[in-house]
Amino acid sequence: MPELFRFFGIKFFFFSNEHESIHVHIENADGDAKFIVGDEIKLDNNHGMKNKDLKIAEGIIEENKDIIIARWKEYFKK
Image (cartoon, rainbow, N blue to C red):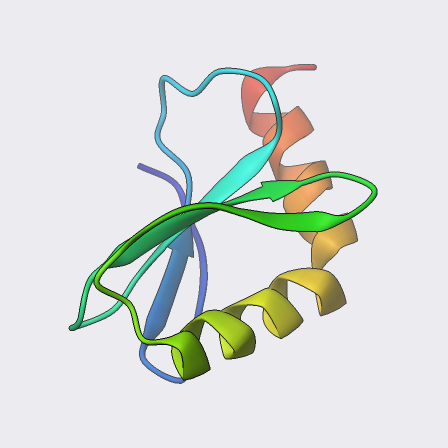
């Protein structure tokens, strides 16, 4: 499970057996969620995370979108 980074108590990662499309999982003490990373950042699902934490995570993903995409392609040899 490659971890990309941690900010504000939120872990950003993807699983080693992922599938298309590019996405990132996040989790904190309250729950977990998944965002699709493409032209736009879209929340795919949420299991218990608070809205304020989702907004923070979405901003971090947007700011680091190029890094996330590059790490995905590097890890999955795409």
